[in-house]
Image (cartoon, rainbow, N blue to C red; front, side, top):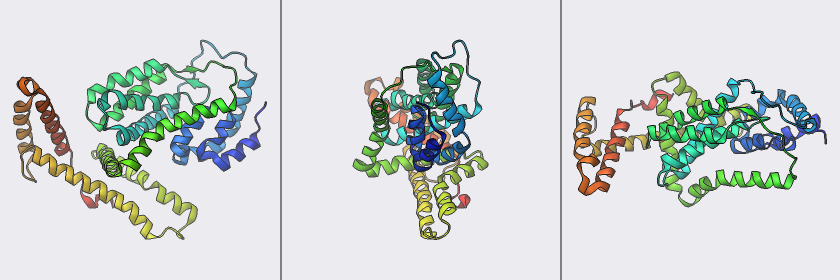
Length: 341
């Protein structure tokens, strides 16, 4: 049955951020992506306004094809590659918030989450990529940055490059019943949101700490690039600006904006507590110089290295990881409180 352009635009207007129009066109991967990101933060949903005619034409053309093109590689798309990296980072941040308490999180859960995010974008439209190679690149990159939240970025980049290298057109399959497709999308949505909802409802305090740590780490990534740092802060305040653009000043006064400001205060206060704890781990007083930090780190690493404490391996391993984490925290430049303004 041919797909109608007017119906597609109606579904885009009514339930676009939830991916209803993509579900109608049979673009299930795109629908799931929109469900998990609310239409790409709203920006992707608005940008699609001009792309809907081509989506409808592609869906109708796919219904008339009997076989997929063989031996033909889809053209390289910088937009798709950038989206793969961004969604991979997004999936990694969600996993860091909801699953970081798991054993071997940085070896199993994190690369799996990032890799699945990259594969989801790779499967949008009539394209896909190699499942094993993409996840393999994510799992091989993860141990290099073990124990560091910044691992999300290189894992996403490596998986995205691999996905682009192995891109191909999807093989045509027999159309499935709508109930089966909806059931599959529901399971995928629950798999993504379930752990996050459980953490938020059953372990709220720890979840807030994870969120603060994740946002703090995200902002610290851009501490050496002030322009990108300001861009990230703008993204975090994007809900305020979108609401003000749509609703004007009425209904969204300064008190609401102060709620978003409290988010920054919470993140910065959490970062301050981390630095204080890091000073305690290294046995230093607050305000120690970089030379003192480096010297204390080298001495403690020698004392607590697991190879030098074979009789107490577990305790040495715990102290060794704490020392490394403390040194990493104190090695990052401290951002002044008022710099965001």
